[in-house]
Image (cartoon, rainbow, N blue to C red):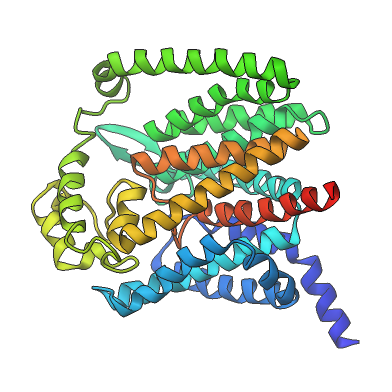
Length: 409
């Protein structure tokens, strides 16, 4: 009887617990002591959620071999890490995030996962607007002589990142005939407002990019012959747009985005980071260990980074370079292989089923690449929602792909 009551309690609190974990997956503007409490609680919640379905979670988690190998390289990097303390500390968060992503893929269908995300982002929108207006000392900060909103998050870029994710969710939801269009459009408008208020240029680029991807949604839903013609036209338009952007790069970067042609000093950091990375090219300096190594400190001391707030750690402002520094060419190659396999599965699923949720997965994967080319580190990250979603998409796509193959036999 007691077991049944406990099981019923866990089940009734399951969805609120999942939303809690997704909401606190990002770095919020809360004190270190509260962060420690939240982390402690989150480990317990993940354990309770997973232990009830540990066989199913284990089965689903082991379907993607390249993903397992990538996480495995991060785990075994404790044997060559240049900063064992940071590696172990961050690995705990990575394990939690990866297991939670596997749980989402096991427990919820892709559409249910997307709905959970929309609820989470909706809560983040409401809280961020409320604190930015009611508690400006908490919800805003001064940067480059202007006031930028950060909402409930620790930095404006984190607010921009989660709102960019929200843009992709609400855009695709708005095209779903079974969804409430007005709710989706309202969410989209609020997301756009918060991106503009945060003054996150990366978030704005991703927002625009998400909108530009939507014509592809319509193209891929057409019959085969018409689809080929439309794809050729789309590629020609995209190539024309790329040429225009390249020809006007200085105007776009300097005037519109407020950056310099060295991307606010990132180029010197990237050059030095590549130079240092090539000193340990195959396995890197260890997971989350580079910037506290002698090589990392050398870069910080010899670039503008010495003026930056490194209390939360420093990073390469490029996800692929960061992965190379931590896990070398082996880690980088494993991620590229895994990403291409996931991309192939998701594209096949959308073309085969024409379901909106698979186009959202496709859009998320494209957005993830764009983010990591600029500054947002979301590959093997222990502290952002993007890695959790990536794991859930990687594993969900395998489950759905196998269903289609079995039904076709």
